[in-house]
Image (tube, rainbow, N blue to C red):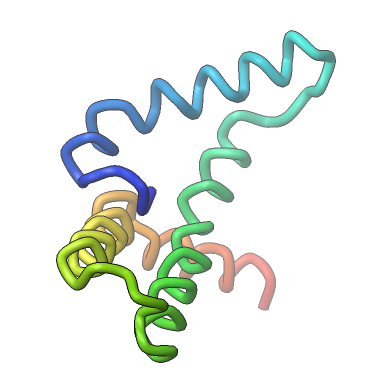
Length: 95
C-alpha cells in the first residue's frame, strides 16, 4: 500500500491481491478470500506505524517528498478501505 501512489494502488490493488490469492490456491494453499482481504486492509495499521516510526527516528535520510507521499498513500488506504469500520467490526466480534 505504501510503495504505490494512491492512484496506482486504487488501479491495481485488487488485481494484485487476487493474483496472490490465486497463486496460493494453485500451490494448494486454501484461504478464505474475504477474510484475507479484510486482513490485508487491516494491515495498513502496520504500515502507518512504520511510517510514523521512520518519521520519529529522523526519517532515516528518506526524502521529505517521498515520506509525505507515503503518509498520503497510507492515509488514503485507511479511508478508502474503511479500516476504521473493519476495526470496529473486529472489536465488536471479539469483545
